[in-house]
Amino acid sequence: MSVSLSHVSYSATFTSSASKTTVPGPSLSPHSIKVPTFLPLTVKPLNSSFTPHGARAITIAPHATSTPSSIPSDTSTKTFHGLCYVVGDNIDTDQIIPAEYLTLVPSNPDEYEKLGSYALIGLPSSYATRFIEPNETKTKFSIVIGGANFGCGSSREHAPVALGAAGAKAVVAESYARIFFRNSVATGEVYPLESEVRICEECRTGDVVTIELGESRLINHTTGKEYKLKPIGDAGPVIEAGGIFAYARKTGMIPSQSK
Image 1 (cartoon, rainbow, N blue to C red):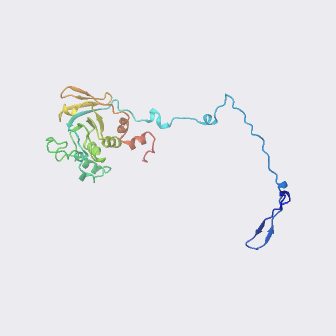
Image 2 (cartoon, rainbow, N blue to C red; image 1 turned 30 degrees about the vertical axis):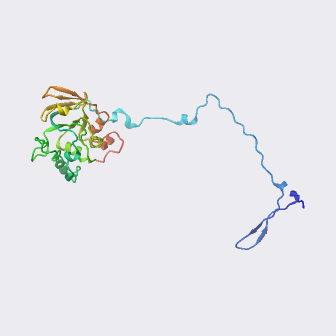
Image 3 (cartoon, rainbow, N blue to C red; image 1 turned 60 degrees about the vertical axis):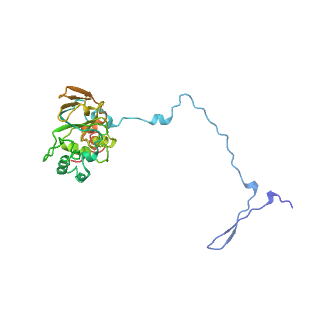
């Protein structure tokens, strides 16, 4: 049997679940279905003077905090002068401040001072001269000179804080444990300076020394020798400001504390 498509009727039955009523669908014929036609897409070529819209819309302006006037003064004229205290290699954080004193809270002024009184108390008895004399809270040695890997051990921030609370202004070492160096910058307590030679073998505890940050050098007035130091670089302004948060407030990176 042959069936002509043009005589086929299409019907649909719709049943409503509510009324159960059967409604016949409309009769459709292929000739009644109109298919829309589309014109070919015409693309105009770009001329050579075309400039992307995005490039015209972008305006780059420097952040206000990056201007020189908003950055704390540099340390090019800063100097430290006083007696030095010499230690050896691998001075760890347990020697700088033993774990039993980590309960002291540096943000409390009284406990900050007490923390400083225990600085370098963990050094062995072979160090005949102590960093802080008995019954004292401050040291007479403003500069610590060390060997390699100074500040190794735990990540305690109390280590540089204790040295700063004791009255030390800078540490000069052949090399540092990375976490001690970072904590020194973050807290702004002491300047962690690196020497190009083993100064710890040429200086003695009690020598009178001067550190000139601008010249990146250490002068031992007792021996008459001078030593080149590695520049402190971008860490200098952060320490000068008093630590990472103080620096961020001075440069406008974070809001200043309400007075």
